[in-house]
Amino acid sequence: MEYEPVIGLEVHVQLKTESKMFCRSKNAEADGPNEHICEVCTGQPGVLPVINREAIKKTIMAGLALNCEIAEYSKFDRKNYFYPDLPKGYQISQFDQPINGKGYMEITINGEVRRIGVTRAHLEEDAGKLVHPPGQNYSLVDFNRSGVPLLEIVGEPDIRSPEEARIYLQELQNLMRYLGVSDADMEKGHLRCDANISLRKSEVGSRKSELPDYKVEVKNMNSFKAVADALSYEIKRQGKILDEGEVPEMETRGWVEDKGITVSQRSKEESQDYRYFPDPDLPVMHFTKEWIEEIRRLLPELPQARKLRFIAEFALSETDAKTLVSYKELADYFEEVVSEFDEWLAAEHIKFDKADHGAHTRLAANWLLGQFLALLNQRKLLPKESKVTQENFAELIKLIGEGKVSQLAAKDVFAKMFATGEDPSNLLESMGLAQVSDEETLEKAVKKVISENPKGVADVKANPKAVGFLIGQIMKELGGRGNPQIINELLKKELDL
Figure (cartoon, rainbow, N blue to C red):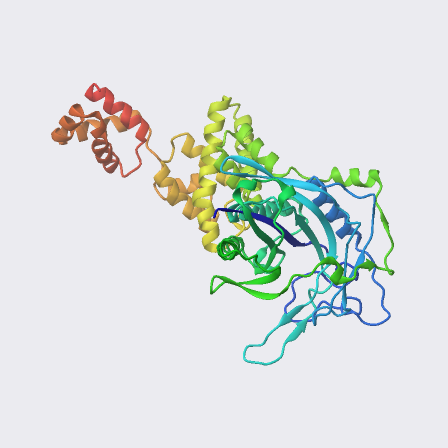
């Protein structure tokens, strides 16, 4: 029988603050265990928590970007459960009055815009981390992460495939980075995802009123690929159970990446199992409309709006714009390159029409997404860590556009620029790669090659598409530095093509 997946994601985002959620301990990576801890985040008797205002502000920023309803009044609650990494025996979280209520995020998949609902986006503290020494029969607890502010984004069950889940997570990661609220690095645990998945008969369609009577939670997924693979496995596993006339058990399962399977961990908890109640040590929070609007004004240009602007303003394809925008630092670098290019045009009093400007911005984007990104990835650098300044990058694009260097020679120049940070004009001279555009010089080379290659000339007259051989010979004669456009025109003129 055909089934339709019903998927909802719960995403935990570690907020980027100087201190932890309820104490002054540092919120940062540590060299060793239990370095950034204090009496509060280790649950010592008699201590009192204090709310981190910056974490509240960043939570509201995220809520606004997710189109959430921002509460006027909100509070913290105690979520009670016992586990070695939870020193107080409860977690300070939010239950019935979260900071951010209903919202949504839009994603594009196969050219179709899909709206994925957000149930809530609430704030809580993180637990510690259990460390299991290999070969030992005990575990250790590292409390460095204990008390770190976490934004939990609870999604509606609107996702219908593992691929949609992957795209949603990637877009959410990008959004958090644009807001500056988190580094959202999955490998470092800044962004963690649990998935709830169930199946229903496909004829039901997407009507939320007919959700399945069960759901399975999947944990331990630490990459976008792992999320998609785990969901794909669950679809097959649950489909087989349903085909046999049974109903999958309500449970929490863990993804075992090296085996490509999920395994049962425990029965699924319900909210009553946690015995929530308001935290008596923390006051109810009141958010005025004025403060929320003040935070709204701090929102940067968001990825979707930036993508549309790149397409309209810089004549980029949707694919290139989307790829650039998905890497914020590279998109920032691109805009700075274009700005340098525009300043040069203004200084030289050169007027380009929109088509010319678009040709140069597309060329810059192609080089950024090609040569530049490849070298950055190879050396594991951020764009701002490269030795290639935005000014020099823009100058190289100008030289290519003006025909002063061929695309092929420019690759050698750029590799040298990346290694040394030198100016492209100087490198062109020192490397002897400046493109020859002088018609007199090119005409001599064209006539020489025509006279020495009668068969090649005959082939071109029989089939003009065979001109590539002659162009290659001319470029060889010029050491690869001839302007191919001018050479092509001269050949047509000499051969009456």
